[in-house]
Length: 620
Image (tube, rainbow, N blue to C red; front, side):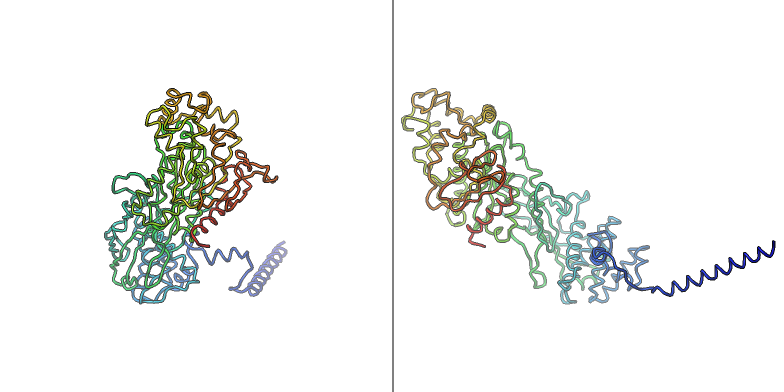
């Protein structure tokens, strides 16, 4: 029994020795260094990830930590490791790799600790890496660290100058703590002025997620992109900038000879603000450098805080009685000479904000944004069409006179009006000579013989006796019911129209005419229905009178017509307006877009408007 146990133990021992030998042999067959085939995305991730995109350090920064034996030290004592790395750079200004590593490591440490000084240090290191001055060569433009360093600089500034609650960025002069010394900032307060307005309340757009717009435009470059509010420095009358408008701006911190100043421990810098509508690049070290701009987020932020949304349906039914927002012509930026106005006129039960997709795309067209300025006409869409068109004409006339009383701005007198649906009818009524044709649909007597008050006579003259405005050069009609809308003629539409509250001045004028001179009326008193929906009914007096009136000579015209489905265009409609109503003979161009009535935001519509505006501006 004892011998069997001994034999068994001997065999087990021999087996263990054999297994150990096999393990040694297997180990000898694999190398300690090698490669393995993986998904290319995995390799790309390893090569391109960095702290802002993935939260992981980049391969070049890890290289620096390992080369200088600082990897474990950064994990255990990050501030000591950063100080040691800073000393390397301070004593040898040619260390570009170490500068980038410092920028990335400082940002990571700032995120982990919330220490503002390390956010600012990240921006300073990144700037020194990008713009070394006489102390070294700038990074290779094909090096991915160049773009990463720009982003670290931009985010470092945003976080470094953030308010205590992080909601805004505070731009001011002052001395700020750095891990290795001080940052002395001189802010250019003059850069806050834009015309007669002051920029204020700077929102970091890097923290804004945009929804509701198809495209988000970002012009990559240097500087912290922000959305700025505006404060009027003087009481405003007439043409104004749209309320709650946010302007895309960029904050830039300049550091002269940054690598030399790193060694001194006290870094002097100048901080300036640049308006994206005025400046898109700056000179740094003799090089033209683009500024980082986020225009889409500023536009979306403006609309998210705008009071205009409440006007959409309330303005149709109740006008300014409900919305308390007057009919107005507003700009998406302060007026600037040399850029021709593009006036956007919305349709029924709509608002100017519905042009956001078009404005977002075209204001970010590099060939157009320096040539155009968008104005928006907001009005109560239930009001009589002739009355709304009168307000549009008069506001345009007053604005041109207000902005350029001496007539020096040629571009101001090369105006384009783009109207959607009812807005197209208003646009058309800026560029016709109506003679007495509109008046004749209303009265059998000449205006001067009508027995009404002078206030009523004046309103009727202004609304119905139309002359073309001389400064309008181009009209774009989008889904416009030139001969009426079959949807407007429906029982349901008329029922809704019966609920519309007319402006008091219109109600008074109509009552004045009916009560004081009823035999002069071309219509039976009970047949006088002047709400916009009634007027757009096919065969209405206004449609019959307006449709044959030609556009004034010298005004280019374009039609964009929506047709749903794939059937024959000539027999189609957009669900509200038939092709036969929207079509005009003799226009300079016509484009049919397969869409429903709300076609003003359709990509094909925007591309056609882009083409038309480039043609108008003389650019390709």
